[in-house]
Image: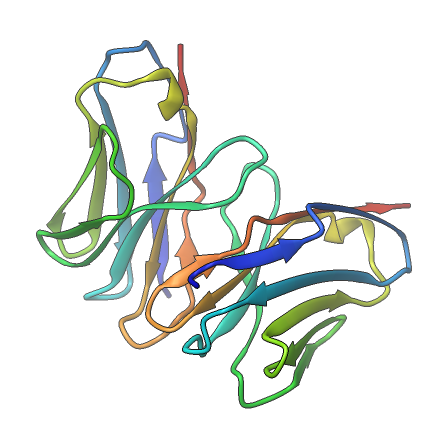
Length: 109
Length: 112
């Protein structure tokens, strides 16, 4: 019940394309859903986060879509750039963050 | 502004040797503090978290321990390292009333 399932494990997208990473959860008590971005050799950093009272949140080229009834949320990166190449982690929390396994994203020039 | 420092950045240690990784946070008070481990190409495993001085919760049984001797200092230790302790160790902090974690730059440990 405490798991967050993230897919795909890895993703290759052409420059300018849309990158989509999906996460699913079981615990309906989760009330905070962040996405973190991690570059090689660095610590993760918060990219964007959403609360379950909204279905979508957009910040620049990054959008979280949230489906409360399906218990799923996803990260969309529009106009993907080589600089977006990184590992992305979803997470869910009510009092403690539960992490997805991560998605390694490669943007091909 | 708040900053988090971790050291050393890189460490190569023989099996059976002790370990001490240090983390300090500046610019905030009463933070929640966390130690995570990340194996190569893998996800984030929470090892320890602390909500106050001397208060440590362990998430995974192992030969590692953590201590919080001061409000903004968090230390990860081992008396005898195993090969399986190799990995990327990340310290993080959060405010008491917010979910965002702020991570340090990490300490890469190789046990030979």
